[in-house]
Length: 462
Image (cartoon, rainbow, N blue to C red; front, side):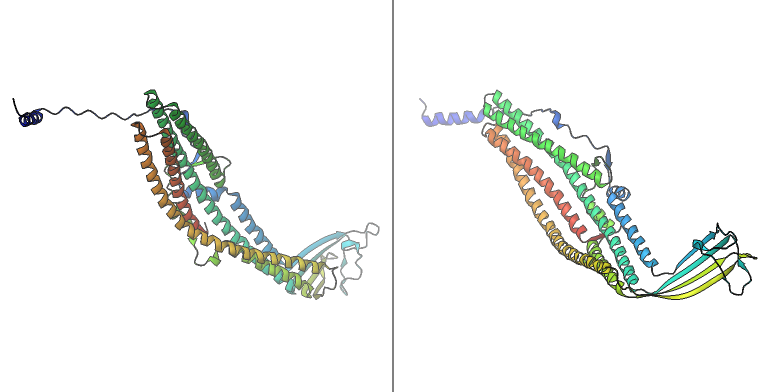
């Protein structure tokens, strides 16, 4: 009988001579196929913009705010020309024909005044009917109030031009914002559909697990609830997309929705904006501050104009009167030159009330300037800080998305092999959807922050 050691050696030798058994193939992971009507994307807008230049051209052409600001410049220019007219010579020519119905042979001038003895030794008398022509030229020599009114109108014209520049800056900023928000809404809608598809796949996986007896009804209900949440997010995201398109339509001057083409270069939007606007060397040159200072200067000159109304004025006037004669064609009967001194005495308190009113306007303009200066200071500080904050948020969002994606893949695999619960599957899927959306929003917020930082300290003269 063989010893135990011999038997052991024989078994080892036999095992080494035996051919290895063929490997068992790994199970194929379950690949659910889902179909749902809500997975169909929102229909594109009938009108779309493809480039920044195209969108800006539409704003130039159709913006009502821009047209209103341009009309304000025209209005201010007209007021300035009216104020200048008070300092320039004024000429007027008038004529009349007069007939005395009771005494047809008696010549009468304007207003029915009989003309008797005009002309001195000239033998030519006025004709009947009588045609007269009067030319009058006046020139202001000393009028402090008119000069202050002119200065006020010039300052108001400068303020209107600065307001036009501020309108252009705000329109550029608003257009950039709505373009970014529209592209972000398009991207968020896509991510919502991906999230719904993933939720439907999890639901199919939970149903399959339940059918095989490895799960329970609670698992199916939990995952189905997650599908309902994904549908709700999809509906809200689609509505936000429609509203963003409508906002873009209003921004470019249309009364309907306008979309953004898929090849729109959002990353180059900052560079394209820099071509339309110029960075400022000094924040005091920003158009809203320039407009506020001009309005204060205009209000101050307007108040000084009212105060100067108490001062006397000196002007020069020249009048020539010509009439038809008999015999002959006509002659100049009167040509006078006179200096006119006007001294205001009492106007019933009108001038005092006007001064008080314009003093109030001046104080309001001064407070508005101070308020604008404070707002600009805060806006600049916030815009500069927003870029750093947005960059940090993007970094953290990328890390969170990567971790959420890894967690979701591990949780799904664990659920497939029966080691994870449906609650963990739902939670990981919801966390991944939220992380994807957060990352998209953070990336677009970074683009928006860079645009705001530039346009906060820029001047747009397109």
